[in-house]
Image (cartoon, rainbow, N blue to C red; front, side, top):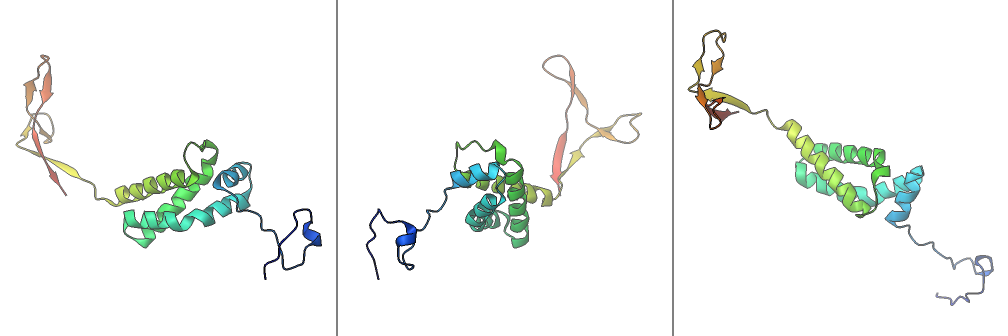
Length: 153
């Protein structure tokens, strides 16, 4: 049942089945409140954006556990640095960039360390057996070490 409401009437005069809903707060309003210390506003931002950001981190990391670690790190950084958010971009864009960076850092930490192996290096007396690349004169008249190296894993 739809009832027309006279704009002069107050909420108390309306029948109980007619209610005015407050409009949903925008991200800008929630960020401003969170900057002032309103934890409920930050929780509202978390509820609004967590699902989408989790999907983004999962696409990058390929693992649920790593995606959850990345989103946790992203939200912690967003909370700690909320005062640096200046509103030039949307909050969702800012948070997504933080989450992407957190995801990439997780992948970097998991990547095996790459080592370089000197090929055709010579051992110079007094170097205690460490391979040294031969010295050659560079274009500026100084000496530079030249050698070939190969990437090994």
